[in-house]
Amino acid sequence: MSDPAQPLRDFQPRHPFFVGIDSDGCAFDTMELKHKECFAPNTIKHWGLQPVSKYARQAAEFVNLYSKWRGINRWPALMMVLDLLRERDEILQRGTAIPQADSLRAFIAQNAHPHSDAGLRAYMQDRPGDPDLERGLAWTTAINESVADMVRGVSPFPYVRESLQAMFDRADMMVVSATPCAALEQEWNEHDIAQYVRLIAGQEMGSKTVHLQLAAAGKYPPDHILMIGDAPGDMKAAKANNALFYPINPGDEERSWRRFYEEAMERFFAGTYAGEYEASLIAEFERYLPDTPPWKRA
Image 1 (tube, one colour):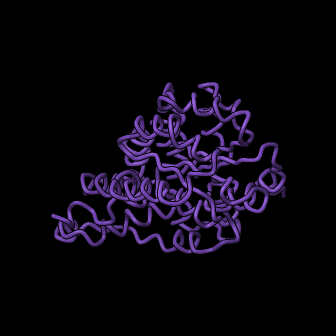
Image 2: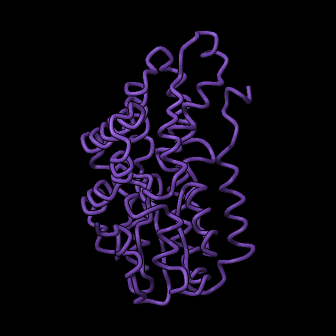
């Protein structure tokens, strides 16, 4: 079986700099649409959460959009949603049973297969008929179908295209995402910006940390590697590879991209990005994403 991560290993520098760019919620204003119209309804449907749908939506939106876990892989995100529901007083009072999904937790805990649809199918080959895994496959398949049906015509944020064009002859650029590759290919080609990146890496190729490790780490000086993202997971992937991070602040994406285009990009190329300037941007970014749900804060 061919290794889906091989293109990352084969990636070789053509320019002195490397820039990884997240897609959903970072380059494209698709996070709200995908999670509110595709992820949440299918989570409620496939995991039997209809009796507590209001709370299920709140938990799903908090984990995936409005917390420090924004942008994490869909599988651990699902487990977090179920766990938040299981401990919520309103749900305990109703006596609604929330699935534990132990078999999916075991899938998430292992590292032999990537946390992707293909990885789940491969994992299931040795565990035929497992109801949790079957349910998980139906859930993720339904999400992909909903995304394909619903998400179209969503343009990149202002200054994304301009930034890509400005960096094209100066940096090797790559999409670094936890979204399935097919959806990424569709979105980046639909808006004619795939031409600016050398590779589109999705969940099938591993985590974002793996993407940067295989494609960039050791091939460029650390201060010549920049990850642009809208979620703490993007920052974690950058720091795990000793790379720099530029945050796109959730809810303030246009201003973030304009600041990158007008200011931060040239700092990166000039070698003045690291240090106090990057730290100030990260401190601002972290204030946007809490770790406590609003119903617990109240």
